[in-house]
Length: 125
Length: 368
View 1 (cartoon, each protein chain N blue to C red):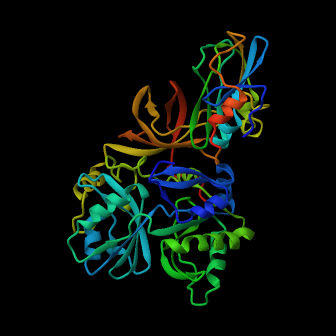
View 2 (cartoon, rainbow over the protein chains, first blue to last red):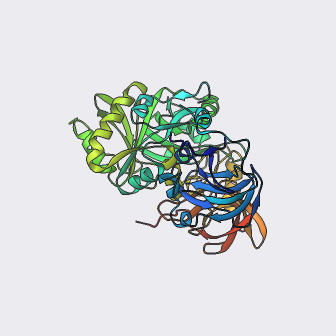
């Protein structure tokens, strides 16, 4: 499974890309593969304040609805509106066009997240 | 995988095909190969092959077999002629569903019951209590089974059986016959769980892999692909078919599930659970299963979501899915009677939000 080096990871399979005081969040390649075809997403409105670990979005495949947890606390800046018409972007490009939302982070150095190498060890071989 | 999960006789085939496996009803089974959506669409447009080896194949043999089944099953087995089958229920004394199953009469004093994996052991326990001259055989894991489903299934099956000149033509709907396929004896019934034309094939465990590969090879030209439990579930729900453990349970009668057509109270003899289902057929059940449709772009309905009519909760969704064919959510819901009628608006609750839905017929697919 692909786990890019420049990202931070939550054990619950979200990734976080830090850019100065903001962050972009999505789900990992492993998560999209386990969910299989995503057919619906529910994303947060901008301005919403979220704590680390809080349920902030839902990604649904045909089989099931999966909660997405905020990997870091902050204030939502924007959600990826393209996903409402093309949720399959999450499967096709989980680390790129399939991003879920951007937020202004509470802390420039979030804690409790894993490096690419450490996250990779949590995955089934 | 949980310890002691039963392996399908087709496990090596699934491994070779790169299937993703999940635990299901005590078995380790493929949930998808190429992807749930493509498997779903291919079954609707061409054909899919499903491993159903987990489903129990129980044989009832003996002079007392018909009498025993008449006493136990809600649809009247005496209606079946040799080579015919029908959908029926094993009920508890309160009329609740222990199992829903397909019963075939192979010949006089010889029946095949195709039962759910999750209820197989319990079915055998209930069946074996019969004192009449009947023996029930078919322990979990002793057989292999596969379902060939889709508009191309007849063309594929015809090729599969034509190599043996003695083979009869493909069975007619709800009929079963004996065939020789790749040197093995196979029972083939014309039924299925997808809403498409299709067949279910039953054989010895050892014969499974050879026949699975044989059918996949012959079916390639017709677009046949292997399909997992994921698409099996979305396909069956689009067809309005119930899943035991969700839409049916020991607390739900077949009348409440809207399946009274398969409960025969016109016959004189008693059967387990008869008084409840007979009374419900006559005066109506306290709850009834309805179909719901959501809207595109709204969260899909799921199992256990509450259902509201005019701000009052009237029941719960028993099965729900974003329909790959229709592009909106569909669901079966068990609601209090009198139930809202087709076309009426109601709501279901998703993550604290009320989502609009409409009551629809339970067969969600448009008629062909």
